[in-house]
Each structure stands twice: as C-alpha cells, then as structure tokens.
Image (cartoon, rainbow, N blue to C red):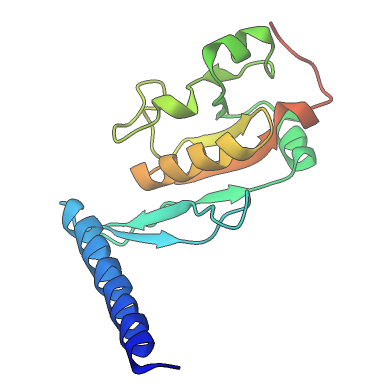
Length: 164
C-alpha cells in the first residue's frame, strides 16, 4: 500500500475519532441536570438504539420492561391501579383501542412529563400498533423518570376486546 494511501486512511480514522468525541461532548454538555444515560439496545433493526433510563444525582434509575402480550392480558384481568397507554396517533386510537386505555401519541412525548401521566411511580402498560412506537415511548418515559413502565408490543397482536 502506498504511503499516501496510508496517510489518508490514518487521517480519516483520526477525523472519525475526533468527530465522535465532539459529538459525545455535545450530548454530555446538553444535559444540564448531570444525568447519566444508559443505552441498553434496540429491537427494530441494526441501527436502533433506545434510551433505557437515566440515573440522576440521587441514583434513582428509571427503566422499562418489555413483557409479552399474554403477560399484559393477565395483568389486565385483575382491576388495579395501572394505566394502559396507547401511543398511536389520535386517529388510530379512535379506530379502536384496548378498553380503558388512554392516548398520548409517541410523537407528543418529549422533554416534559405528559399531563395525563402525573405520577412518575404509576404502573403504565404501553402499546402501539406493532411494537416499535411503544418501545420508543417507553424509553422516552423512562428517560423522563417514570419507574414502572411495561411495554407489551402492538394492538395487532391483541385478540381481546376492542373499544371504539
């Protein structure tokens, strides 16, 4: 290999490393509350990564748990103090949803706590159409400090009653 080619490759490698450090520093600097964000992986493809929680100064870690549809159904058989959260768009929710569910679209979950979800320790079961948005929404809720999030996939796999 020519020396000039080796120098170009070395320069590109150094450039990539420097860019990574600068991007990482930008994200760390953007967090004014000094939280540490833990990334635990994704399920929707090779580049998907979901925030799984955030650890604040008091070391209280928020996270979400993925459960299967059968586990969710079992939980719903018993009345309890939990919320069933549909994170699809309002028009999708209106077409039919799990009985008793409330709707907060995934796209509406941002940097602020949703008004409908006032208790950070409330048990919340999250679903969408296929499972992708429920994972994203669960990760965002965890990053906001919610502590009892159970993501259970999509309504397309639900064989129970539907409410309109």
